[in-house]
Length: 166
Image 1 (cartoon, rainbow, N blue to C red):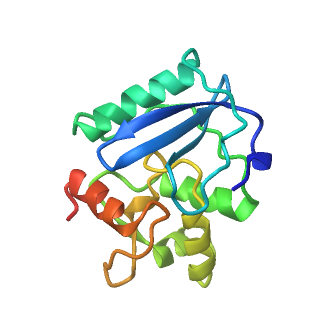
Image 2 (cartoon, helix red, strand yellow):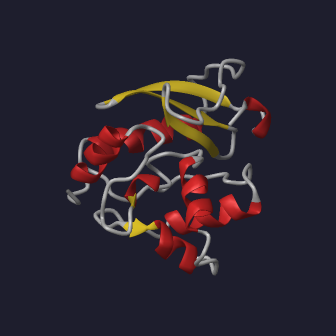
């Protein structure tokens, strides 16, 4: 993703147990969460740093609770409107995967009415702009294997372990 996909949101840094993250939000919704250096990382360098954005504060607080094992469901305003129609469909489907559960690329394709689009689903999952909160880490291979994750497979494994999956 490039900065051109988003309006100019505010950003902040967040320390996580698995490395630094960047969060970005407009005044009304979260548009980006990701590990610094991950694949498909948004170029946030031109976005102003904010300590006053309420959405960023709420996101940071809920993510810290999640990292501490105190939260399994996020309650945040999300803006997933910056991908293609297909990507948005996939990202919406990811929101239905409960904490402690996993799904497969094929099952997501089936759920969105496109069962043969397994590779396209995988590509859309990999470009999820709101990591962890839109739980792309909960998608595994059809055999249960930990397939790719933009933040790295080790982080995926750790997130699933935190949720009691592996």
